[in-house]
Image (cartoon, rainbow, N blue to C red; front, side, top):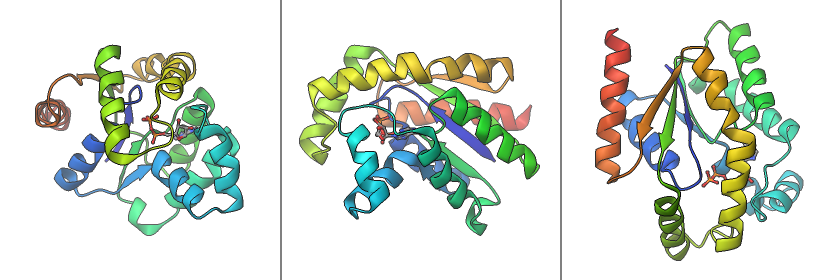
Length: 191
Ligand code: ADP
């Protein structure tokens, strides 16, 4: 199974992909986590990425694509993967399709997590207090919302045209959202 999670910041992509990971037993690949890891190690890549992340802008495609490409070659990613926060641009989506096609394992499903913008902002401000993420401040949150609408939302049409998009209502508790995801997934697997 190869699944992509798409959604605006705060929609719960990270939380839901971790839950799904336990349910399906396939590994999770979060570019946000990988980039935060690189930043934390203060590597050259991390320092470069931080210049974008800290302001709510997207890290350049070549950097992200190299990072993901290296991960995907690992044995644990051969049987499947849950992509969280990737792809985020059309170039990333096309490049992912190309590499998956080359290995004969196309994407199965793209889950869009959809929620009301005010709810998302409230969630992120709450998370800011708990996790102390440097990009969870009001100004950067607004910027990340704009970036989502401008650069990532076009992917919804891209995947809709491929017949792979399923939209999930991401309002409500994490349990409620997960149960909607399971229903969608089970229906796809059965059909
Ligand atoms: P959120 O969805 O809440 O913004 P993420 O952890 O997915 O959180 O991403 C945090 C930041 O990391 C983004 O604002 C962006 O700067 C960077 N980032 C993550 N994934 C990508 C990606 N696929 N392409 C470019 N930048 C990315």
